[in-house]
Length: 259
Image (cartoon, rainbow, N blue to C red; front, side):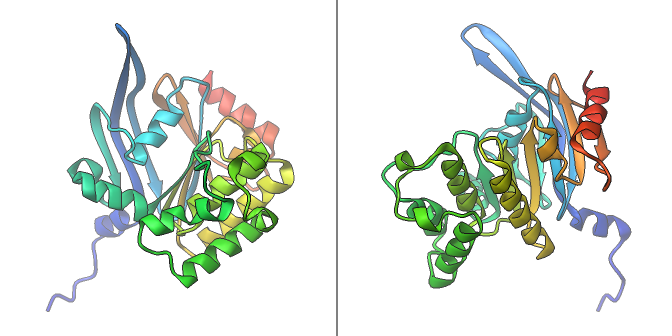
């Protein structure tokens, strides 16, 4: 029997949710090659909220898609909870996305013929977890986001903010270990945005999620514990968010890195 305590290196490895190592991605548009990422390195600890900030075209959304394994890097590694995603089969990658990852897209991606409740429960059904407990969890999430009165409505009967809240509820319904959010509060009023962040922090308090948010809004980044700045497809710096920071102070610190 081996009674030795785990090494410091093992403990550090267990504490890491995301490792991006020298990630490159280039897209072809006609005859043109458009570089999106040019060697991104990033580490995110378990239970951390990290905001990725950058101008349009800096590579923020591309990085998010690689982390969700909706796209693959041309070079480099994406490691989630110690697993190199490149080593997964297509079936394993699908299971990884269904059971471990929640994604909030800018375009909502709600199914037009499904009601709000059906859209929110769709990930649970695909994962084979559409039981009474999950349906109760979905209702609780929808209630926290103020959508109970809209349960039976289809997306075309919702406002943009309501569609965004439905997309958020869908991403959170299975309480994913990793939540990836692309401008999650861009279509929300301040009250709804506050409800979203409160729900996220509730999940973090339960020790269930790591959150990576892509945003250009200092007010959204202010909710994170750390801000990482991207420019031209590379990380140009990062800083911790201090308890006394406000949006203006955070924006100034970001501009120092991004300029």
